[in-house]
Image (cartoon, rainbow, N blue to C red; front, top):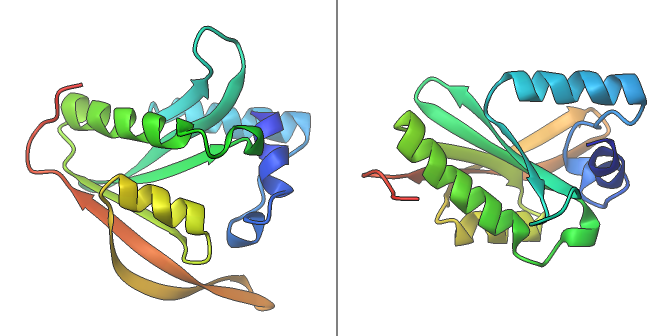
Length: 151
């Protein structure tokens, strides 16, 4: 996890999110907090111990908000799509979910492209700021599923 966090903080997309912890104890604490939700999924290369990223959900009422982060060495290989797609199907089947949301910076073209490929629709935009010095246009995306999807 720590390697994924460090890599993300060094990416050009880090400006659109809160910084992730890079020190040992802080990384362990956040990882435990994620794992305790039971809606956090580490992604490993098949037949390997190499963690390449994660997909997570935050339940808010009847909505499941999608989040993900993958190490840049594994971008553009379809891993984020394959993982998110499988986990949306899993959450739909196991939890009865039918409403998913996600937010991303509109300038984060790879993330917008992934959400579109997953059939999310941008329902609104807003100006987002984590501090007074920088703001950006964010997109609010949603996916509604009308029936259970077999895995």
